[in-house]
Image 1 (cartoon, rainbow, N blue to C red):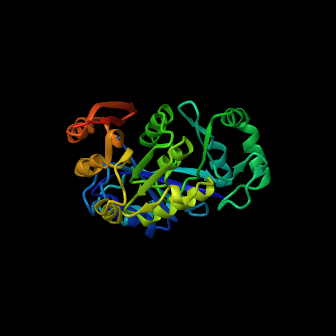
Image 2 (tube, helix red, strand yellow; image 1 turned 60 degrees about the vertical axis):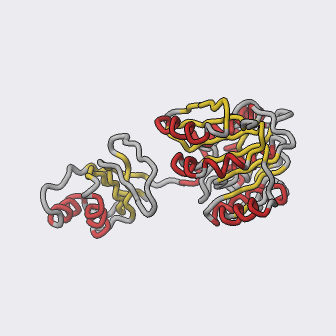
Image 3 (tube, one colour; image 1 turned 90 degrees about the horizontal axis):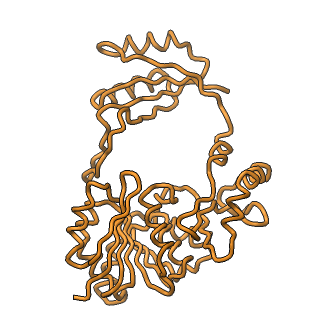
Length: 331
């Protein structure tokens, strides 16, 4: 089965009306994309920002007549209709297409991220999702070199799949943090993963030798995702306890959580600045902090917020994003 794909350009003010028009005309889905590579910065609470100029893509069944569709859109649109671009989208096995592009990923020299259904003896049929045997065999054959490198002695392999909670290693903010963790000796250290999402940073730290990580996130789905990923990686949940920020604050106030060796926070620059004192004071003197989720133009503001507590704040950049790390002052 094939699909008819219709694309048109629209301004931010036109999007809602144009989207409704496409859906009324029979579109089974409408997607919005940035038309001019415009960065979106942190939204305020309750805000859903959009780019100034967008590309709308409406997906229709292939039996719809293009001329009739165009006439319908023009008749129900006030003013001149933007230029319409039609194309045919051939149906395919979308799971297989995704699988062909998904590869084991290396961060640094010894830390790898691999899909959770893969194991040396074949497909893990107990995984929440797994390909059929033929697709898995083809994927393994296509990635044989990477898989052999991944299994070298001394490497740490993190099993993780894309999901609702953000964080699979593909975004620069996560990649920067994973590379930094790979480069550092964190044997037997106690850490905090603030804004843990899927738990990828905390899990990586435990696989690299950390003894305990406290996971904190304001999204219950993220806490569940972290707990699920502990099971996938055969990590005892006792070594990665998770909680909401308010519960973590109570643990801090009661003294149940003592100052840690390292603090990881891959969230947003504005939130990092707001939480600077809270995050900083949970790190012991001589301990370290690793911050990310920061656009390069926001780095100075974040550095200024953490300088009262940390020395040697160092910036690493990947694309438009940066991570910042430093050492807790002794005074």
